[in-house]
Length: 116
Length: 113
Image (cartoon, rainbow over all chains, first blue to last red; front, top):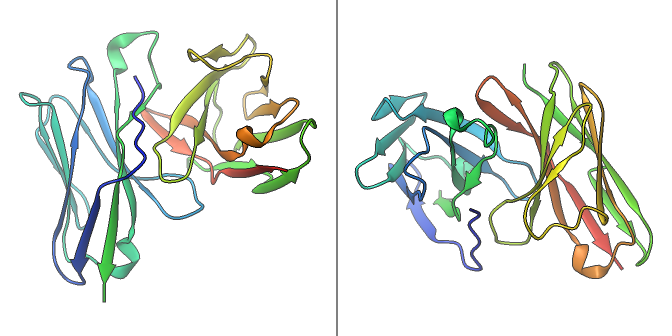
């Protein structure tokens, strides 16, 4: 299903700190997860993805952790910069679900603000 | 690769008029595209799945006669908001899959006066 929220969670950090953004997903059959970054007035931008057969994946300055037991996903951003300020969304998909291919279910999002 | 464009980036129209939004995959083909709507400070809500060569599939609660979708080619899907009303004002975003990942367009801001 879809996730709708009127007040997005917020996270404020100082430049240079590490940021951790959390997401709880609902569908235990989901097998593919993506983190997106959305800046004001723009479309979501792909950051990193992870499949359900993994519990950790690293990119440049970002790490995604997946805990399928508790259906929890996190995004870690190292040495956060002011340019990282945006809304971050997790999204889940059931790749093996046939009819649901490509239909992402988005989490409510977290507003990250990085102070210089 | 995997660039998705939208046109226009913003549009203002009068209540009762129709507005067409285009979504293009620039460097890849997409037999399926997706249309989302996003209200301020909210998450993305899937409206419909656009299928090349066949009818679109709409999510529950989305009026298919109001939001007309046409997947004209392997690189173009259009969303037409018919008889637009102020409550249709929103940010409309399309996406297209490349591999297992969805890539999103930059969005279209629709304001209905």
